Length: 396
Image (cartoon, rainbow, N blue to C red; front, side):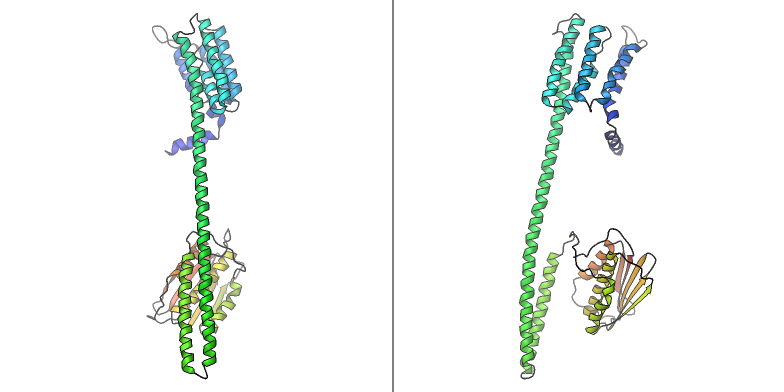
């Protein structure tokens, strides 16, 4: 199946060869026809073969100038039948030219040339061969010219119908895609509205209850304790609803969205400082030559470190974490290791964090491994290319 496709592609790039291809079987048939005698085969009449070859030469330009080639070939066949009726073959070259004109030209042009050509060829043949115009041989030529024109028009109509059907399918696909985008936009607007309501509602409650707890802390510790319990419940409910809403927004085929400013490894100290303030000891070491990195690599490394530290703080029951940045010749290795105890209680995470880290690393051509260590704790190791193209923006 591959070979015909290769040939079609090659012929599509060589119009002149495609145009002259019908002349090849025509020459073979003409050579064989001139070698047929009354009783036996004989040497072909080469002068007739040469004339057939010369008459086929205009076919080289039949798709470029279909009208001119059709008029030229019909005039040549009529001239040959008039001056050398004893060697005049069937006007096959004219049939090919008229078919091409019907395929590439308009309906009026095709029949405006084809019908007079059929009458002229039939009349000249009948006159030079002393036959009636309604005789079998004369009518055969008349019918052949009309059939060539009609066949060309049928092929032209079929191509136009296929093109129109293809256009309708493409238009329907575009409309379907636009409708899908509209529905996605409406759904995301609704989710964004719900997200705003969830955050605004719970944060308002938390803020109010925090004010009550602050006021009652000295005068009524019991009521303050109850207010703090409500704060805990509301914050947990807010986190649960926020996680559910974000899960709805997550789409596997989402295009990366732009973020400004994009975090880089230069902002790592600020990130680590936030975790240190929450009670987690974080040490950062850098080895190798910190050459200029692609923005996508810096962003991916930053997000992986951020997610790994977040998981450590939430789930690992760790007190110490080490972040190592090893700048190699072609890759940056990021290692995040914590000292969580073996069998430490884990939170009920969804696994989106690890999946997100893996998606980020793979998107820029890197790799990542993550898992518990035998001696305890958890380790994330990511190998990211130093440079890449194109640069990828922040992913949602």
